[in-house]
Image 1 (spheres, rainbow, N blue to C red):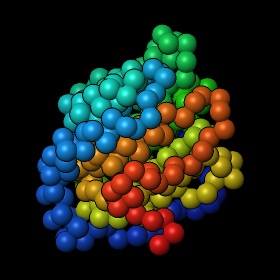
Image 2 (cartoon, rainbow, N blue to C red):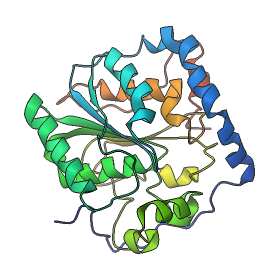
Image 3 (spheres, rainbow, N blue to C red):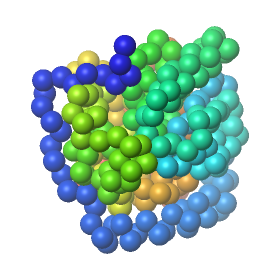
Length: 268
């Protein structure tokens, strides 16, 4: 069985240009986003606590588990059992990578006797979404951070890096698969309009008739910093905390003082 879901007859995703040089230059703010974690920590500790289930976090392109340690440590503090993906640098779906990811998911689910949540940063979010399509009986929910799944491959500023790192033609790979299709589990896309790598519309999950439990949450973040951004962390913790088996609820902007400012009004 192929890892990716075969493309349907809905046609290619609409083309959109990649972020321009101004937004790309704003990626330099990523260290300041992580620096905001310390002053935000007391508020972050007021996010809902989890029920101890396992969460696997997938890193972005050319990144490894070291980049997701801060997010995983935060989720550990909110009572989750987190795991990195354990496959070194993410250089694309090389031979064995996707099979190893499926084995990790099955082993984590078997060990706990429960479904596993999947969180993916950028390209890691593509893995998370497609794993959930392949193994929905093992997946509790999917959360992606700045993941490009709804646009043409040229709508990012990283597609050439992907081809160089993976040794694969991204156009040939994406031509046969339906990446915009939502997994059949609760799915959240966290994105930023000021993303300097991925065109933000490429991270928008369109309403899915086969799965109404989908949503998009906007934060103010860079692409390189979204996985280190306190507002993204709060949203991830909030989404993971929903009880398994209960009716899924969409994200509600926090009422705590100041937090509404970091989640732009979706109706604006």
